[in-house]
Length: 596
Image (cartoon, rainbow, N blue to C red; front, side, top):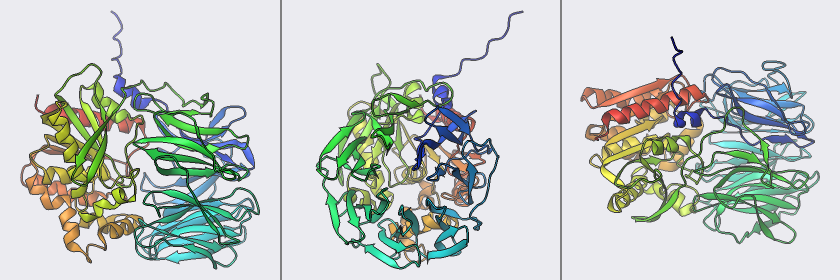
């Protein structure tokens, strides 16, 4: 009798199971010693990476995976955040570089469990750590071999930014004025917590620290601001108080920046038209030079002491790579690489608030009208880019067009576009989503009877809100870890998100109940006609499970077509098996409920 062959693994599943690896973070005084998050046996875990030998050594081994990590300047210890099943509430631990999983794990800070709000480690071993919790808001502590002391505490949202190389100053971002979406910057003396400098650009204009010059004795701090209506840079000299605004003369807004190791320049990432590219700036001459790939999107970049730049890159068609500036591969993810997908094309539509930019994927050789997934991103302070997404590629494999809409509320298009959603949270974004969907129908790309609205986190919120406020438009809804009942979500969510919501709505549900009710999907649940699938993490501190159950109970009470998939993690999963299961659930739901 012949042997029964194993079923072929679908291409989409191969993408989800392909090895994953992030950008290594290297130790300032031991540049070949790095920490990196990479997948092993289908789980994201923290690894030590020796850039000189190429050795990649797994450090953590937790059933739910581990994603938050850093390394000290000496390269002696790797630090990683230890929570419970993805609930984001825990403590920082450290482990010797190159240790085996579980070997030498310590709790060096001795602080109570909390939500993380920044971590900076000095060369002497001094640690500045930010913590958040409902009980106290935000605390920033200094921990040395002699014990810990409180440097800062406030009810409102704040986070520890950076510790200067000489350990004289600490830069923090804070929202004592009550608007965490537009923070102010403060520099504190490490010795006594005295204020050394303060930058505030007024209502609606955030200013926050990026990092001190890496040169010891250098008093310059790199700062992000939005004085000209988009994210830009300035350098603040703490000794003189002088501010030097940086005019790059390149389209786009700042998505990230880092000092070169000698303090003479910067490596800057700029978002423009849903692509993120890298540039090098010489602070002495002002010359800006493009570096790295000129297509797709750079995810992260770091300047090396030898002048090289390490960066991560991908495009919609090509999976991520970690490479050097010359294009050579620095670090390959364990396991098989992800199969490629299709390129994106740009879609620009005149919406009620201005030109809306979207990215469209269409199966190769397909002609419309096609079943179409309208995928709305989370955040909302984020945006979709020309980058690899296994999720989008799966729908393309299934014969769907996929469009990603950078609605008002998205970053990358200036401060006014990002903040426009404040006029009517949720509804503003959905106006733009509808304009793009209508355009694709009018141009023959999308089948109006087979439009799927999908998203996770803020995208899940918009999905449920769209199903209730635009019930005739959508055939199926797929809502991952959504805000479903905004008042209950506010009551149960982590402290930092409470501050975010107060900033967004202009107060708490007690202060402005009408605004929360107007933007809450549960307000419109009785109007939902499309079958809806909800995916929810049992330990999610961002979109907690109780408020999702409130919404599902209302659907069940009226016999509306719906299903729920619950999983044992938080706001997403680090396990390939779980990600594959969720994709299968979504595919099965759409196959059963989408007409045709």
